[in-house]
Image (cartoon, rainbow, N blue to C red; front, side):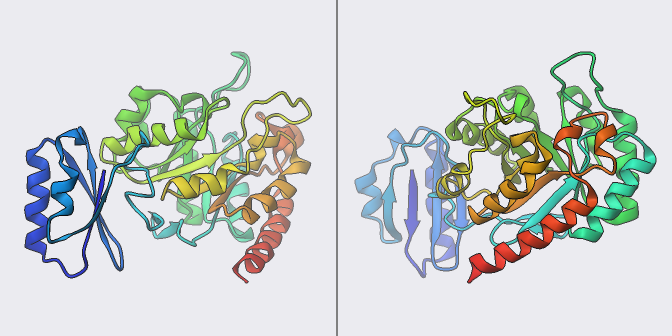
Length: 334
């Protein structure tokens, strides 16, 4: 349920109403826009008499929300959420590139890639230290050592780092990580999501391989229910009947998620297609669809990458794509 307040109400009136709601066992989410203040009521709202609320002097209108996701719902928060990552803003018209290798392989590799993607226009550095792999025999990442190398790259370039968490038990190692990525396989790891809800970290939440948009938003709700509202949604392709590409990139998710939710949406064309040659057209299409950012895998030597070399592009290709993305965004702005 949401209660839209009239313009000009006093702070005391708002506080009194909030106290009354909380007395009925409801949590209250306050969204203050330029022209309206909206109170989002979370809990058993059957105890609230809508006719009584509509009769109050400070209430403009009251609406029930049928969607199971509340905090992530745009009806609760009409304005786009802008995520601040160490001074770098994403969402609400702020576009960012998240670029780097699929996995951190060595000191020289991560520093070279980080330096080059920074020069090409990326402001956030991605790199896997803990790698979920389909085969137990594939490279699983450098783990703690990989995190240390990412932090060193951050010091050298000034770029905040984005890396994936696999297990609650390793959360302490992510103290200096700026954005914690929850991968597709962990999207419905609810114990992990609950724990991340108790942190103040920015969470990049990837859509699962066979999950709906509603399920993605419900996973975001798990995090937000714990008090952490710093969430970036990521469309990275879903499993379909198609076999020519690794996954099927669902670009309809971008405008749909932005219609349903106030959270920013980024697209990962690398994992979606699994082919380096398709990263460019899908990246441009994602920007045209309204994405707030792109997450792209960049490797200095893709043929010899220890992980996902087939979908990785070179720093030079990334620079070219970044220039084209800029042109597309200029056209969209009109």
